[in-house]
Amino acid sequence: MSRASRGFDLTELERRHSKRMVRSVYTGVNCFISVALMALLAYWTDAPFVFPSLGPTAFLLFYTPLAASSTPHNTLIGHLIGILAGWFALAITGLLTVPPDLEHVDGQRILACAVALGLTCGLMPVFQAGHPPAGATTLIVALGLLRTPAHLVIMMAAVLIITIQGFVINRAAGLPYPVWGRSPEVGVP
Image 1 (cartoon, helix red, strand yellow):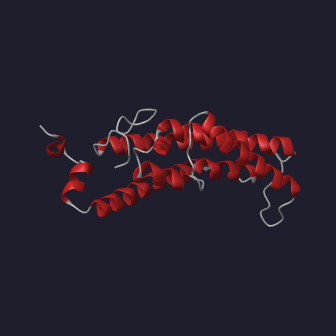
Image 2 (cartoon, helix red, strand yellow; image 1 turned 120 degrees about the vertical axis):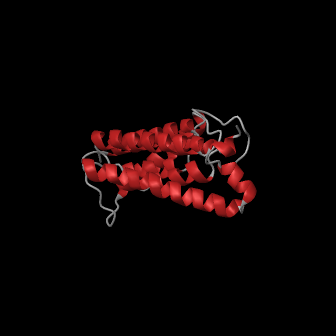
């Protein structure tokens, strides 16, 4: 029995219909579902399971699921680097307990943002974990928007959950989405 006759198969739909339209609907619907589930989790727990960099992460997971930046390795390690670099930047600038103030940015906050982004962008290549949304994650932390240890753990939990969603949905769509590293197929769908 072929994959197409067993149920949903994204590549088969793309052969029969406009690839651009199929990819557009696939990306939009799955980003909606993934972030809606994260928002419900945030609602039920009163915890920050939704933050701005999850949007671009969801987009990558569903629009370019076979790209290196969309792999579980790059997604998880990239965000982890961003979170740790943001926390480190807060620590060295004395801002760990200072609430965010986006209207009155001072020298400490400028330094925290610069250090966080510099470390994140410098360390992702070292760990072969390029994931552009991690640059936003590190700024969220360096700006103090999410800065407590509990918030940082929840951020990583949210990244793990959305990565699992990406794995399940992409595999259910018949894509060879990798378990951890680079997909065996080179290129993007």
